[in-house]
Image: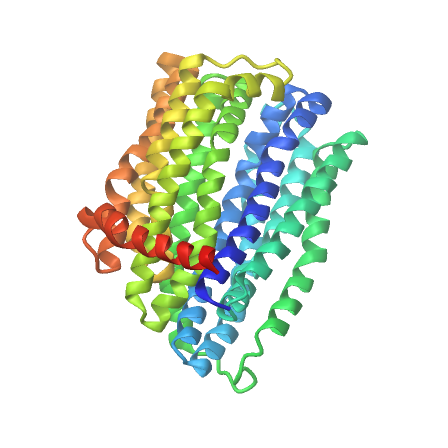
Length: 455
């Protein structure tokens, strides 16, 4: 299968996957509001901050090991790939054990200081639901490693479809719980059950897709563990800064405005960032092939993929911002059954943030593809911390409008840093990206299109 066909397959799979994720974020919200109420749902969103930190952490060491695996396999080092695969199993198992212990400590501390008693949720149910959610997140920790098997076999679309089915089943299970009057414990348990059933199947299909030579003779290497651990700490910063940003700003709104403010802020952010899900489709489409080309040493092809993905992202952002500006508020009113009334200024600030986000988000795949996470780690954590502090302060003075301004600061900072840094990693001048796209890449794309049309 040609590179073009692989990109098409990846894009179709990614579109389906992101449609399911958007469904997860948007579809259940009216049901949450209807069956749980605005304030109860707001407290639940605040409560999920705790397991979200744990869920994000799987992307650290799992990403590092998976990237080493793919880069070695693409470069022809089958035995090296087998070694890191076996070493990664040990690393992830150790991290799951550590995560279980850490989860118990966190829950014990929160219970000791009676944090659960200060919410609208029943304290015993809240503590049990958090425990179940944490266990559910831990069962997903091997997904990153086995997803790399599909990527190395150049069948990334297959893994994307499988993960999409898993997410869709989670949505259906959550809907069933809500419709039949289930509470937070039942909702968390449904999530855990889906994880327990899916992950063994996913691992089996991954091993079947890529028959890795030398795995039986593979050795658990201390050097591989050290390298994966070192890179993993860098990748761990990505979910950490994302958790700081998303959960931290949510907590800042809760502390300054209250539960209803959390619901308005979270739903507005979810709806406007539905455009960002299209960015993720582009990201998921390009990343597997970009990493394989880098592993193979085909840097010209890698640079071209990067330039095209940047331009497509900017075009999508412009269209999405226009749509949200014209029709978004009307859709939001219908979506929330006219229960929530956000400030208009807040809405347009979030729409503007979409444009700033487009300037940097898709570029981050280069850090991951080259297995160099630290360049993003520092910038992400610093900008997230600044954004959370600004959200808290601005919310105190300007309410929800201030919260939106505080959230936008992160996109402003990263827009100035990420694109140039990623361009240099690929060995190209960021100042001529747009010129090369219009004078070279676009000409080649037109030529391919004409040849296909003439046939």
